[in-house]
Length: 120
Image (cartoon, rainbow, N blue to C red):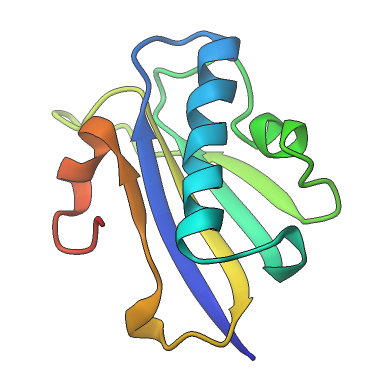
């Protein structure tokens, strides 16, 4: 079993806690499903949010999904002029038998434009 990293992102339509829970939950669910992961495969998850998101911590969505014994941390993205607004990014460290090339990085909706090279 190797330690791997999985990337992902989602752009929110609005800054509301319920909407953030829904969208971040969908992102985490897609990451788990596409990489055939269970909560036991998770080592840690790092969330970042653009500076225009204030309604909730993205990690709260993970806790609501039942990811309760995995270390989570939230941070703020750099405030770069022209950057895509209302984006939550994820960097999950996992245990997986898959080769690095087979890890599915997940960019939902408009966030797919962020990493066309790896978005699946």
